[in-house]
Length: 94
Image (cartoon, rainbow, N blue to C red; front, side, top):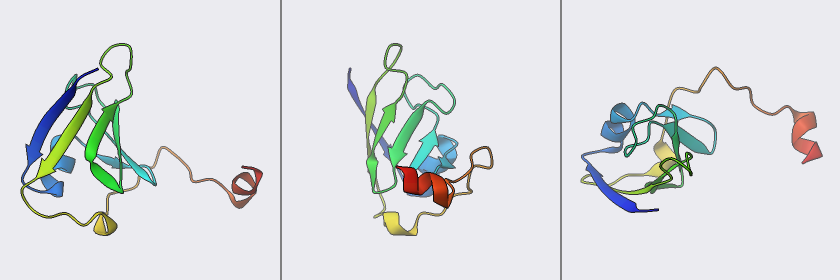
């Protein structure tokens, strides 16, 4: 598994380039290495790392730097309509 480096002007450039989608605590996006759609993720609290879920085919981690300062608490993405949030009952069972 290798670590690649990518630089983006802003967080918006990253989201646009990789077709990012909000999934709650994390963001799903296209992998910047293998370019497979929705194969990579990054946690909202640490957007400097993107990991590919395809461990056997790609599995690479990308280190991301931004030319503009980012504030991860202000990240607003369109929520993915294909997933549903956990209900109160399901949350209590965990």
